[in-house]
Image (cartoon, rainbow, N blue to C red; front, side):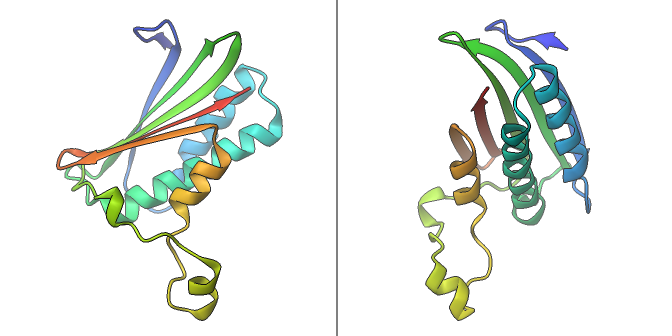
Amino acid sequence: MSLDANGAREISLTIPVAPDMEIVATAQAAAVGEFIEMPRDKIDEVKLALVEACINAFEHAQARDDLLHLIFRVGRENAREFLEVEVLDRGKGFDQASVELPSPEKTFSGRQKRGWGLQIMRSLMDTVAITSGEGGTRILMRKYK
């Protein structure tokens, strides 16, 4: 574990864009959460948000290097310990404004079965920041202990 510029401890992990590799990412998230003694339910929320981020990248990014780059950070802000996960792909990026918001009506009518990933991530994590452009997409998610 190394230190970033703000003194947070971090671990880097690179996984191939391949079936079930999100499980490798969630195992790392669980290990880091356990390291800071985060409650199990919060670790599970981080893991689910991370699965959504990974699957979105696998399905949509078209990463030039066929890799997903992850950074797990633990730090402290205002006396609150946190686990932060950064998910970075070197894909085509996307326009967040063009993403159609899912709704139960669309899902149950069969017009849109997918599209809940960003909503799920935002509902499970304390903060989610997404930046995307021609160089790829970066999702930064934080969960406080």
